[in-house]
Length: 107
Image (cartoon, rainbow, N blue to C red; front, side, top):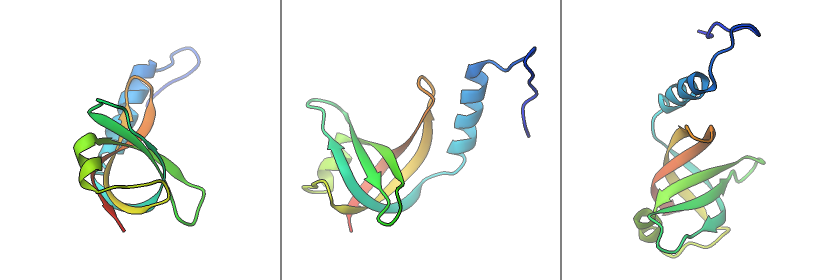
């Protein structure tokens, strides 16, 4: 159901971002397959960032994953096709859609 709004009575941005976050997160975790096109390891970081691209279409997403999950997947290099168990989420501070990766396996 759309939220009521108008030029004279707009919704606060925080309401829209939080509503979007709640809607996206109802999807729950799902296994996806794609090709790792970027691996950003941050030394000492507890969270690492990956870019996953569909094998056939120009569709890419950012994955955030704990270092332990990335390490347990074995040595991965850019170009590797993987199966990832991800949960879509919206980061409230930036309004960005990302996917939290909870498990990662080379295909």
